[in-house]
Image 1 (cartoon, helix red, strand yellow):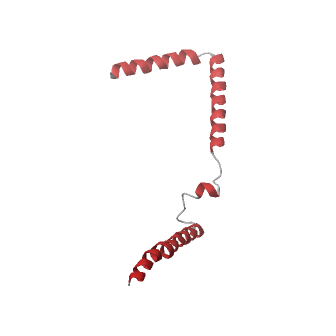
Image 2: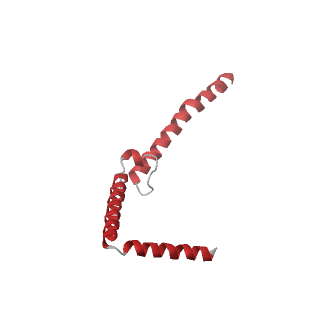
Image 3: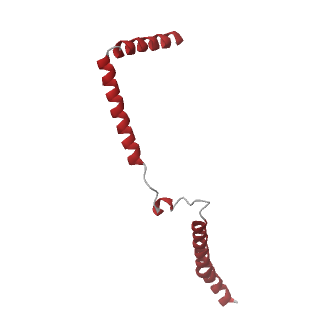
Length: 98
């Protein structure tokens, strides 16, 4: 297996040397490489975007004090609603029977 791999690499190296020996082929390869590099860079720039408030909404940052305060206040609001509406409704029928 290792012998086949080394023969394959030697063949590829010999082919590359034969191809790049001519100046015309080297120039073509450089143009193709630069075009590919430009396309990859433009693709990477298109993928990078600024995080908006909506992007960070589901992933709060532990260092963002104001956001953490807002989240904790929101959690307390839902707990307070549950306490007032649901628990108070379950207590009322018991109070009537007593």
